[in-house]
Length: 205
Ligand SMILES: CC(C)(COP(=O)(O)OP(=O)(O)OC[C@H]1O[C@@H](n2cnc3c(N)ncnc32)[C@H](O)[C@@H]1OP(=O)(O)O)[C@@H](O)C(=O)NCCC(=O)NCCS
Image (cartoon, rainbow, N blue to C red; front, side, top):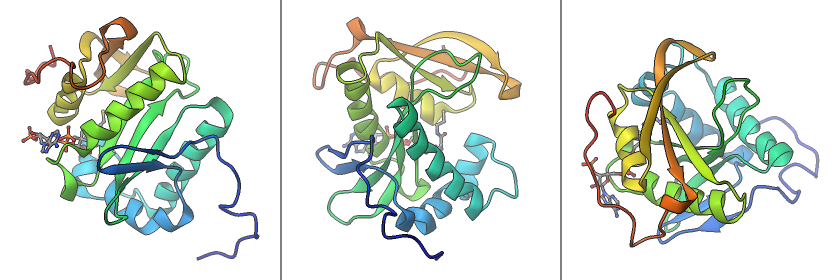
C-alpha cells in the first residue's frame, strides 16, 4: 500500500451511497483494489469485456479512479457494489457517460464477480441505477451498449425493460458492432410492475 495524505478517502464524494434490499452501492475505496483486481482479471470478465491479456492490478486501480473521477466531473459513474450482510465486493454497476464523440447517451452498465453470477445482484444494482438515472440525473432515456455475443448482459438489460434499438460500430471498439439498447422514461416502471423476464436471442433482437 502506498502512503497517503490524511485527506485520502476522507472527502465528500459526488458519488452517493445507496442501498437496496441486499446491496450497498458506494464510491470505490482504495481498500477495494485486491477484490476489484480479482474480478476484472478473471477469465470470464476479461473475455466478456475483451480486456487484453496483460490487464493488471494497475489497470484495475485506474478503472476505480476513473469511475470516481466521472462522478466528480459529471455526476455519473459506477458504484462499487457490496454485499450488505458480509461487506464483500460483488462488482460494479451504475451510470456511464464517457467523453467519446460517438457515445450514444447515459449508459447503465454492470460487471459482477463471476463467483456471484446467477443471484440477481446485477439486476438489483442496475434497478437502483436506473431509478437514479431517471429520478436524480433526470435522463429522458437510458442506454446500454452491449456486444451481441454477451447474452448474460443482454438478459440483464431485458429484465430491466430495455429494448434493442440498433447495431453500431463504436470508435473505441471497432472489431465488431455493439448493440444499443434503450429504456425510455415513459417505459420504465419501478418494481414490481417491470416487464416480465424475456430470454435474449443470440442476435440480441
Ligand atoms: C452481465 C453480468 C453482470 C450478469 O450477471 P448475472 O448474475 O447473470 O445477472 P443478474 O444479476 O441479472 O442475475 C440473473 C440470474 O440470477 C437469478 N436470480 C437468482 N436470484 C435472483 C433474484 N433475487 N433476483 C433476480 N434474479 C435472481 C436469475 O434467475 C438469473 O439466473 P440465470 O442466469 O440462470 O438466468 C455478468 O455476467 C458479468 O459480470 N459479465 C461480465 C462483464 C460484462 O459482460 N458486463 C457487461 C458488459 S455490456
